[in-house]
Length: 167
Image 1 (cartoon, rainbow, N blue to C red):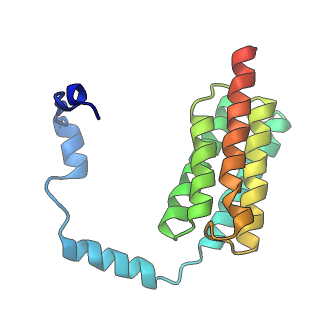
Image 2: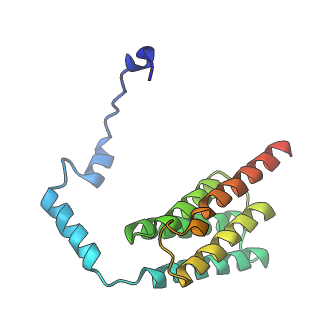
């Protein structure tokens, strides 16, 4: 940061009353955070079953869209929702590789207005890749092969945007 940049002060915007009533005020007590963390860590919930359901739902949405039983907007909305849920739960249950991949794909579909074939190909690759990673129980990026997966998804998204700009 340069000296000129450090002179700028951030702007504080107060939340309106409706938002404050939804989120509350003040800090969350550390004891509550600890209790929630311990509950989540000791929970025997199986992320794989939830993830499989979300991925199966994605596959069904794609099939309905391809069969023209869903509009592009309906399909995009459903896919965004499912990928967002997948990403959040993957992070919660300590699947950083899946979280990263989901974030990359979510960034793509949050910024497209219409579901086209190249975007659908990336989403289908996401569904297929994450299904295989779950099946093999690969959580993190310690395996050198799995560490390259997010980079490949980034490259695919970059190619998507560069082709869209040329068109």
